[in-house]
Length: 90
Image (cartoon, rainbow, N blue to C red; front, top):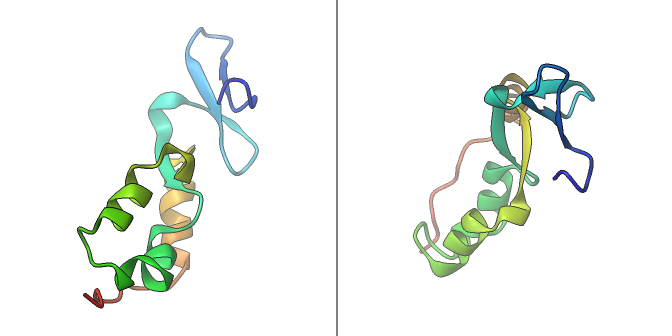
């Protein structure tokens, strides 16, 4: 993330990250946000494999599926989706 310019050392010496609103925040305010919303991925793809399947675990554990975002932005974005997790198909 440092190479991408999304993490820096702030003026006070603390680590900061660039959030989705284009502002810098202290790292303590970060959530690990999914690049593709978890509920969307589950409803469209993951549920066909089952909750604890290797495919679902692989997706959940892949660091490339995550970005840092301010906790309030991340949680608000999830709530605005208006989606609910559908039951697994297996």
